[in-house]
Length: 414
Image (cartoon, rainbow, N blue to C red; front, side, top):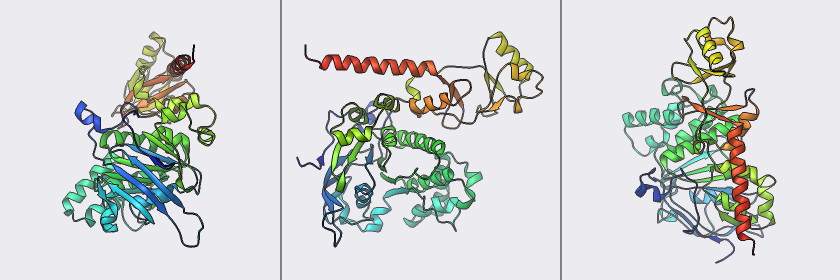
């Protein structure tokens, strides 16, 4: 096997809750993605002594998210773009679902592969609905079916179709534009989604929310995703497998995030992992993997005095006010409810929440910035699900440490 040849073996695990072809038989999420194979793929540009990409061989399993991570200029974006022939390979072979990509017309190939990029690339003169419906229209879907699909996809990425369908891109925030970009990439139901640092241009909070959204979508749709990033933490959070790339897309290590964090292949990979590898393992666990706590809740139209009494009687430090759709909107203490006539403006707004798909690392960040020391958990449509406290995260860290120490003892020769 050459230095750049990596295949996915049967011994490589996956994180619970991720789509995989084995899930179909066991009743989990079905896989709609297909396998991608790169065989000795290279890209050479005229006038350059060395190839930009040299002899890359790897298998991307159907329904997996594979993150390509490496420094700027290492060839990761070039490698990804050769999959849909935005860049033509100089040599080698790429198959998608067993079909040679070179045998297809480039336009036909690209309409079967979703593509999302950092700057989104929405057409500014088209509405959101028109942007999402572009590819289905190009491949001949009837107008009624396109309209239904537009609404379906906007709802899928958390944008109310009635509110956003007729807006123009300039009327959206950066995070909303990125959601529309993902909706457009998925509109024709392609088996493969290519993503080139799609969340790199948004603020950290929005970026975390978009990452959570992608995890939720992938758990539901089971696409094959190739995700390019220079951020190793993002690769750990999103990837079923990570390919750490060196110059000319040389594959330094291709394995699960767990395996790379535990056993970096060399000093270069260890440099990508960086300090705090144990803390990064919190990105391998999801909020849905731990038991959620509960706090008292009240409907927004409930009498403040009734809620204050319940908090006092239950000796609760604080509670949550929920709107008509059970979404957390305000966080209040018993003291803050004295003399208040309505819960609509009581206490403080709930600024940020985490989802069941969020990592425990995300939950820890939310906890550390919250006055009450909890992360509020909301479901995909925003409904209240529970809270995660610092004690839960600390118990998980202790369990990870104990597990690591136990594994180290087993490996130490007696």
